Image (tube, rainbow, N blue to C red):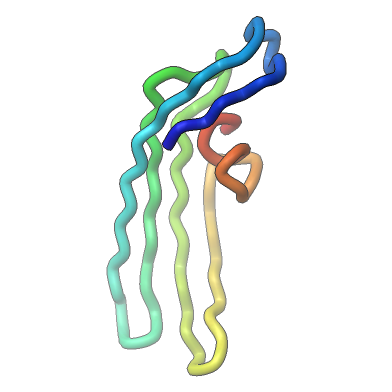
Length: 85
């Protein structure tokens, strides 16, 4: 993942080019339930941030998919999820 910040964040001193590598896993527990995990390793990060880890459960009911997510990140989109955790 490549993210470019064109604004000053966390008093970092200007534009930053940040790279990260994500690892994802999915394990089916039954025909309709699966457990998902996601972890991103950042090559460079802002001070005071951590590598994001997320664990989730997908439950399929035939017409809908219900998802439960547990994460250490502050947001759900890539911008906040990966580099602002």
